[in-house]
Image (cartoon, rainbow, N blue to C red; front, side, top):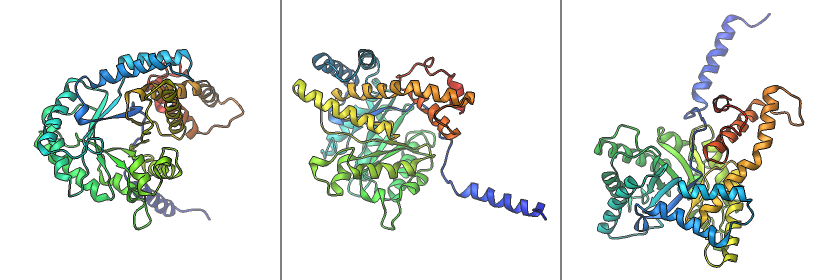
Length: 387
């Protein structure tokens, strides 16, 4: 005797209920252009010429020191990028990189930052305000309010960085602040979006033994764009000695892995942190810092983290060189495997549909960042987007 119609109806009803409740907050995680980095500039050092100056300083660093470990064609690509579009994502910093200033001083810098962002737009931009803790929440709100006053309606890709969240309550306050500012500035609901800077142990593992990050994502009601790892606050909180605080320390890898798992399938992106080893000084010192930075950028890409922080103009050459090389190096195999999969040809690797989607996303990211041309990937972009 087989299953009855009633059995099947009951089974389907249960499956539909599971689909509605098991994956709250998940969205269609399509691959669109994302910045390969976020450049942090203290508010008192930021102006309308900052982006151009960063590009010029990055090019000057290559002129003075060369760019070892990368072939000439890659260096040419980097030079072209620095000349045309040196900073993809700019974050004007009113937090740790700025410090505590008298209110009138920060007010003036906030208005100046908004005007400069309007005069010199980048593909992605925003600011980092002070923590939403009671001691600084009003200062952070006022700074953002003044920036928006001078900026006007924020451009696409504008985002506010919320530092040091420790609980879902921080997200609730961030959502409230966004709604208040949208009302005050005549913006449509949902226009203001934010990212969380994950730099406290409590944001990775709560007192109940669970990570609060999934609940933080849900509590943001679609306003959360990214989770950014804060290298030095997090490492310090875990007792790591300064000489060993780095993006590749085990505590950093653990935190970022939790962030990736929490964000998977939600449309929220994970960004790596920064390295404070800057490429300054003589050529030997610059080359050593570049080698470290390029290795860390490549390491993040290989681990599925496609964005990181840059703190100095001379980090731009290795940011772009390492990123371009990652996609150029992987292009031949990606094309071959995708062709074999779509043509159903036998090969030494048995790829599944999920892997084919991963290959398509790799190619799309390479095109979006400028490493690959649309013609080089071997398939129409529209076809890659539907895999």
